[in-house]
Image (tube, rainbow, N blue to C red; front, side):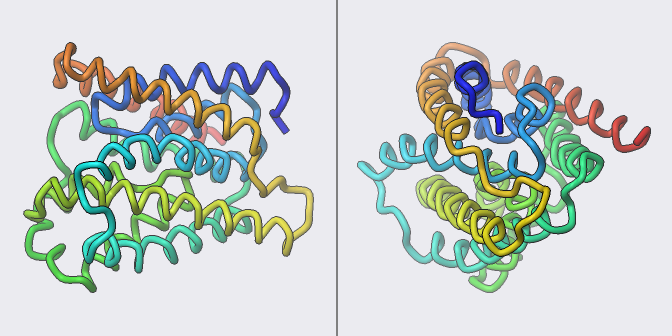
Length: 266
C-alpha cells in the first residue's frame, strides 16, 4: 500500500491543490485524484477507487454542514436520489473489484469519465442528455433510475456523483436551494456505501488484488481536500469562473487523452 509518510504527505498536498482549483468550477477534487493515485502514488488497483471515496467522506461534510445551517437537508429529492444511487454505487464497486481490475480497465474508466467532462468544461455546454432532462427528472422513479446510473459510475471511478447530479437537476427545473444539499447528501451517502461494499468484497474475495481502500492515504487526501475546498471558495469570489472552467477543462481533457492513448496502445 501507499501509506508511507511521504506518499500520504504528497497525496494530501496534491488533494489540497486539486480541490482549490476544482471547487471554483463546481467540481469535487475526487474526479482528478484517481489518476493521481494510479499514475503518481502507485496505489494498486482496484484499491484506488475506494480510497477516492474516503476523500469524499472527509471532504464533503464541510460544505454539507455549511448548507445545513441554512437549508433543510434530506427531503423527498434526496431520498429519491439515494434510492437509486446507493444500490448503483454498490453495483459499480462489485464490477470494479471483480471484473474491471486490470491497468487497461482502469485507464478506460478514467478516459470515459474525463473526456466528456473536459469537453463540457471547455465548451461551457451541457451534454444533450442533460439539456433535455427537464421532462424526465421530475418523477421519483426517473430520479432514482438516473441516480442509479450515476452511482454505478461512482462505484467504478470513485466519485460521489454530485458533479453530475447537480447540473442535471438544475436543467430539469429543480431549485438550486434543493439541488445543492441533495447532491451533497447523495455524494456522502454513496461514498460511505461504496467504501462498505469494497471492504465487504475484500473480505469475501481474498486474492492477489488489493480491494480494500488505503485508509491513511484517503484520510490525508480528504483533509487536504477539505482545506483546499475552503481556499477554493475564496478564489471563487476573485477569479473569473469562465477562465477557471476552461483551464480546468484543458487539464481534464489532457489527462483523459493520456489514458485513452494507454487504452489504445495497450
